[in-house]
Length: 135
Image 1 (cartoon, rainbow, N blue to C red):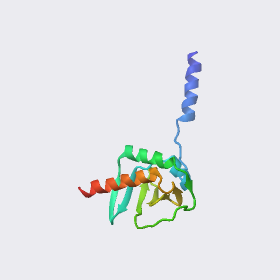
Image 2 (cartoon, rainbow, N blue to C red; image 1 turned 45 degrees about the horizontal axis):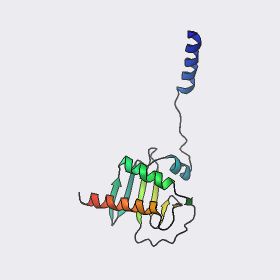
Image 3 (cartoon, rainbow, N blue to C red; image 1 turned 90 degrees about the vertical axis):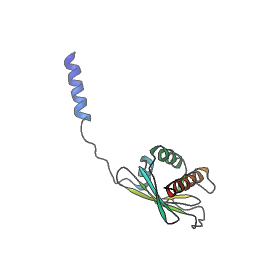
Image 4 (spheres, rainbow, N blue to C red; image 1 turned 30 degrees about the vertical axis):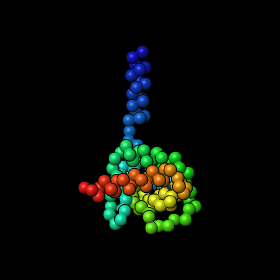
């Protein structure tokens, strides 16, 4: 009985005890769906700010991922109140975003005009910019 157990564990270790290589050739949309950013850097009023709070980033990212996304812009953007930034991922990839009436990440458009998630994201970034401006 012991030998069966021993050889069974040994074969499991042989099968699963090896490095796994991640294919970094994932498309942008796949990476955005499967990853959570480590850091968000954005610019407002000519200054650069950082969002590095993991709990807040996870909350924002789960809300953003719940939004429908499109490959074409469905909302005319005014551009003057846009927040531009970068999403930094664990695998050293970055994605560019523009937050206006909707959210554009690497050519994908998330949300719709007056969407509460888009408003929440904008409010969070504005709050971060005010907090970091006081430092």
